[in-house]
Image 1 (cartoon, rainbow, N blue to C red):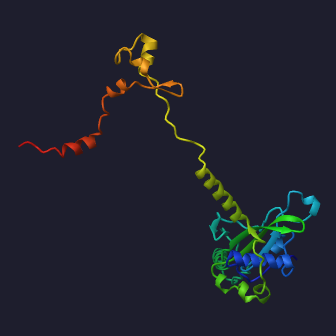
Image 2: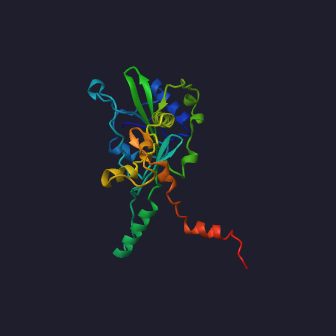
Image 3: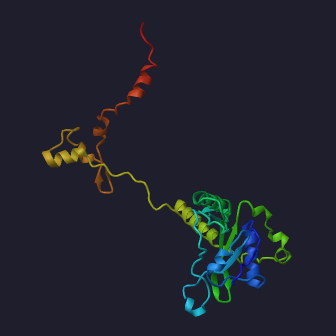
Length: 271
């Protein structure tokens, strides 16, 4: 039977997780090398911690790694905290119990007693905690995963790295285990900062095509402004802009009714 990397242990921080990774790299703790079978899945309990390596793009060359982690349980959506992902178990299976009823108990009441006993024997819902890193190995760069299980009722009673002498004494080399999630976030932030520094899209005003020119082309000479005004029309990027005379003769935009009422309230009334 394949055993967990650690038992009765809780992972408090990414630093704790990296200590466990380093203990696996040194051979102090075992790595899970294959997917759990049915019996091993049933053995998952609060405090079980598993470290496994993700199968590389060319598994035939090494024969190592697991394609994906499966534990036979149903999980809710993930929640992020301190670079960890947390999943809440949905509908945990009840613990098997033999329910014996009295010989004079009717069938209906016996079923109710059995149903009640099964509800009382249902175990607490597990929480799955995951953390992933990139690590350089003799076989090249690999992705390692840590999966830890606990329940809300028992997490405070589990031992920690500090309570385990062979783990508490380990010193993790700086930068050896790089968080896969952290690297992705940094790349995203760098891309966003680059876009902010060098914006791709620049706001520009579209050139205004002179109504006078349109009128001249369609209906003959324009009647807006003096006869020679059209010859002095400004151009921008090869586009003809509206004459100044035309713009000066435009009526001002109508105020909003609320603004109009506010301005009228400032005018003194004539009594």
